[in-house]
Image (cartoon, rainbow, N blue to C red):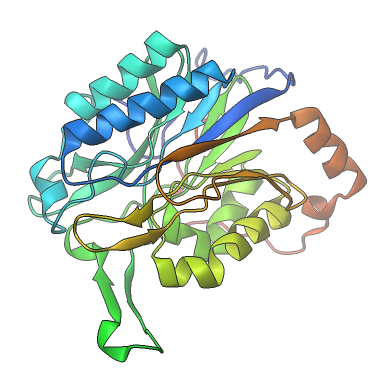
Length: 308
């Protein structure tokens, strides 16, 4: 099983040669519930819709398989890496539909952490093989004020049930190098600089933004990370009011390297948005506007495990 921070080699020490043929990508929006089976059924419906629209790469939102009534619910359904019904579902859909799938996040067991899980984002190729894993690094331990109704302030402590990752991850694919991140990670641009320095061309950001933070910052942050790094952004999101009472923002986006929103799911609830990823256009933009080569400072994490 791929460990956090890892991705594939075609051959030891040999980089893949990537094609520059444009592909169609989709971001899938869900209103996930506590029942894993029902969520997987909805995910399958959306993946089939994506395949019918000629999509090659489909991205699911954070917590697509479970949004529990309480935070500990995800610990109860956590899977061992490489085993379990959620991972089997992703591999089966990828193989049967001929899709590359970024599996949002799923809860995976962590050694010596019985009360916490890894919030793991897995990449499956169109043969159903898991070729990359990223564990969410920045955890959502915050209070969100409600200025109109202070008694409805929202408080979150994700670290109570999620163990943080530590490894920035770039996953090579035939259509570009995917830099992996999750939701709250978007507020930490240094992570994206590391991914950019290691060759990321597409940034994956499955999310479950709260309604207040989404209204204030969602599109702003996604477009900023795209512009800063001259990357495409795939931002599938949770949307709507969930059985636990939480409301998520939705507005799943695909953003181009110039910061333009190419496609979005404008309505609340399940849906998908599709757009073309054209790396030739991206490369031409990077050559005409070489901001990445004009940087004067570098960022190096204490421990980086990169998939070449």
